[in-house]
Length: 421
Picture 1 (cartoon, rainbow, N blue to C red):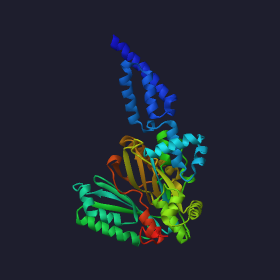
Picture 2 (picture 1 turned 120 degrees about the horizontal axis):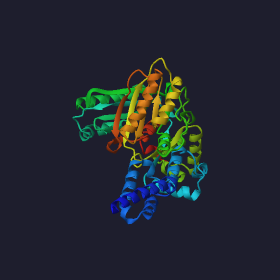
Picture 3 (picture 1 turned 180 degrees about the vertical axis):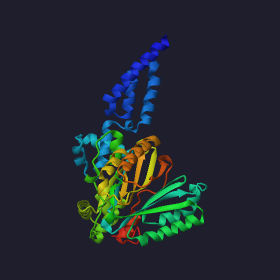
Picture 4 (picture 1 turned 90 degrees about the vertical axis):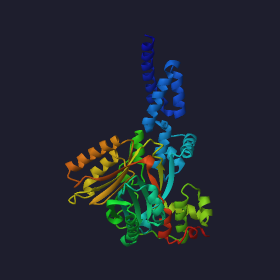
């Protein structure tokens, strides 16, 4: 009988605890939430309820941060080009609170900042995605022992990821010939060492003039989805332009600053000026020009593991040639809302999407709903080719590494040349 009343009390206290969690203590840090829970529970049920709480925290990534911490993280990702003063004003938070939370998020590795060169503005003509299955009877260690140096030498490749027998990479190139040189070397080495499966690797090209980059390292929709915030539609945040683009005219000093921003995205204007051998005013003026003319753009990239995300999905899909990108705008917004991809690039005939999810079930549910919509409107001609990867097990040979590509495109022969005064 005593156990019955203990369990009844546990149920009542659990209900009370969860109500307080949802209505009040969300604004506290994770440590404070746990402390509050412990003060609410008597000794006999404390252990079991706290265990339930910790399991709840583990399974729901939105609970790893307080409401204010989530607001700050989302705002840093949504407005990476704004000053701290502008951001805390946007979200109505005291400067001291914002600064303290931002510092804590950074110190705990919740996000990383980048400066991304706007490819067509510096003379690059296309984005390329290579994807496929590798020979499952070879290991990552074997492949890296043979091919790592070659892969790292491809300056056009800025993102290379593999997991088990799946891989994809992303590149930007001045023309098809330049990219094909790298592709032939890659295929030759991987074929000679039997690293590829029987179907080999597939390549898809996205010339910027005829492609639409709806999301590029843009995690705003993903973080908004996790924490339940509103997310802006794609037409309000396009960064990489399509159509005819005039290459930006840059002085030698401005080129140095651009390379410096890509190499030192977290640093102050003073430090960058010292590193690249120009004045602080030159850095400040160049940054202002770059942002106003969209020559480069900042990005804040969240740590997917810390947000509790488990699955990364690369998906390639072919569209009905009788439809166009303009006709599929509603579908692209559905993709944003359900998949929240951080990479979303397409042209009339095909496209790629890269997204992150808490589970296979979450991804499959969203994927099935999008496929029903595609089929209903006759937008797609075949089942997408998808690679589901465990985020914890992905090996990044390059992870958003734009510096070699930037140096080559801007005409610097080496890393040291752009830093010479």
